[in-house]
Image (cartoon, rainbow, N blue to C red):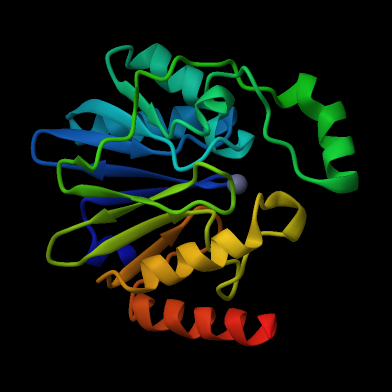
Length: 224
Ligand SMILES: [Zn+2]
């Protein structure tokens, strides 16, 4: 369904989701997923016949940046762009770990999955062609979303909202600040969009804004 609606956006399902977005004369990659899937992403980019202009990172968690080194190896001129707050994680100088006991286990796994750091060329501007950058902190300090304008308006929300089988927040331990997440969801609920493409789970092809508003209502109800 997404393919028919959005022929210019290709979703690569990995442990997390990555998106190749075709613009007029170039393309942009949103998140890189795990190292193992880099080949698949590279093939899709090559098939577009367009140059990869930039890799935009929604946030600095390992499962969204692990494949970055391989992408950059193939496209050394592609700009790597992240938020200022998550930059050290993207550059491999810091690892953003979950809280509590999960953090303890993740720390032990770091030597196995740690990303080869890649230099961030710039921190976010307001726009990249038809993509508007929206600051949506909460999951991590520097999390961002992207709004793609066009006939069908698409919101790439990273891990602000996941959609395994229904809209949900990521597990508590993986979030930096839940209150900020709710505020960020409120912020995106005011935007105009038709589709929601989350960092994990399924795309929402129709009535996405309405579903986000319902989800926000539920979240707020539970808070009181
Ligand atoms: Zn994450």
